[in-house]
Length: 346
Image (cartoon, rainbow, N blue to C red; front, side, top):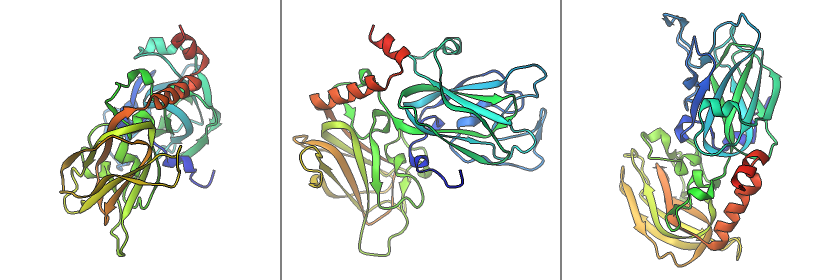
């Protein structure tokens, strides 16, 4: 595939930045498994040798002298529907695996590696040829919600990064009524459009946790016109918003001067935006919280910043409507693989 697929703009469900973890690998002799899901692009330092040889920014196993394959299991930080997978062999030239495959499973709770080994795994990417020092893009068309993926190298070698792009799907049993961040990526909210993503992805705005540095937020290019920048978000489901949090942490000389939040209910009128938070002055490097009336139902929200700049996080706290909670629950159940659905159904 010569062009970068559109699904690479979706959240990386496996990334350490959203809580992903490599819970098991059968071998990591030359380079640690945790490197697979590091957010930064892989790097290489010439002639950087440790006591086991050249240090690689990736996962690398020893040369197999017995039959079999090497595997690593990743717990997705954001369980969801996988739309595409990237297997990146950056800087692995004479030691990359000739083939790789990817499977996925969905399980209850927080299973051990032994319990995961006994789970029912489904194929996302069949055994496919790899080249050295390049990104390999694989479309995924399986419409299921998964909690873990398993990368298999056939038979051994090194992979720099594993990216698992897709749509998060929250487990509704984990939502506390009346205290839901309706704009949270982990609860199923998605960025539908934005005016500018020059420096960083708008998905960062609704990512889990606090930003630890400026690069973990959303920042636009400097505007040279009379307009302003904005981000539109489809909320987890229909609800009422009672508090907005606009966090400019780490943005000091490039924070927006002002911001506003609008909402709409596409069930009633897909084009009618109405005010949730009026245009309000912001301070640099500050976590702002604003109480809202919470007297109107919304399905989408739009953050406008004036005129441009950067924002670390957007939070919209409130309550799901009964119909919103029902729709969210139904989607979750419909996307569970059969084995997991049988457990949930009792």
